[in-house]
Image 1 (tube, one colour):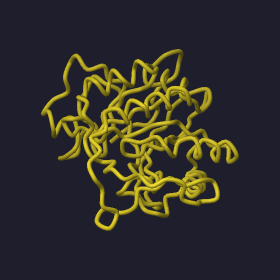
Image 2 (cartoon, rainbow, N blue to C red):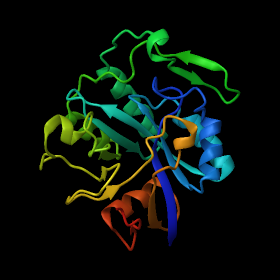
Image 3 (cartoon, one colour):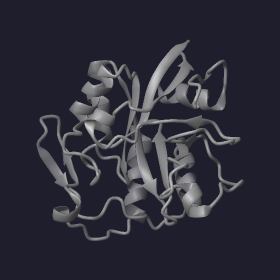
Image 4 (cartoon, helix red, strand yellow):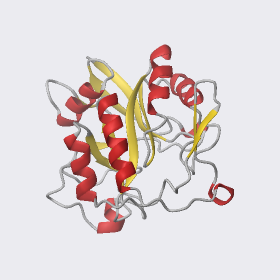
Length: 238
């Protein structure tokens, strides 16, 4: 086993708040430059840029996990990481089923586009991706785990759009694989990780977590979060 640097919260240009410079190709290039061996593309309520980034990552020797930053009905942001393409497709179908389809004006909020490998626009999303789904936090967690995924409440120490800011506490009956923090580590029973939440190129890798694992993969990450077979979260968080 060896230490692996991972940033599991990166937005592409598909997210309305993401810079148009955040193409899958640019994300992979900058991840390599920052010494990251594992990343996740986690756009708001969408997985549509995952597969292209997975493909580009394989060519560059970077493992890309399929993910999304999901907004529940309570306006809580959570990362959902998925084990494979079958699970991603199924989870995207679940997102589409629960999407509120709020009309979206790109002139106000910015473009929401899916591109191909040559960076041609192949799809424009016409509903507001950051809007809350018609699904509770419990339902998001269940949808993640029934597909073999990981459920990680995002940036829980932020004053908005976090499980603490919206609910005031972390429910005991919520099956949480880890929690993501931005700043100082709170006293929690759950595994704690940090990621960049990058929306612009220069933020990729500004925060990351080091995992002691055999190789970068979804399965190894899951084992590290559970502290199984010698895998663990290595980074000493402040």
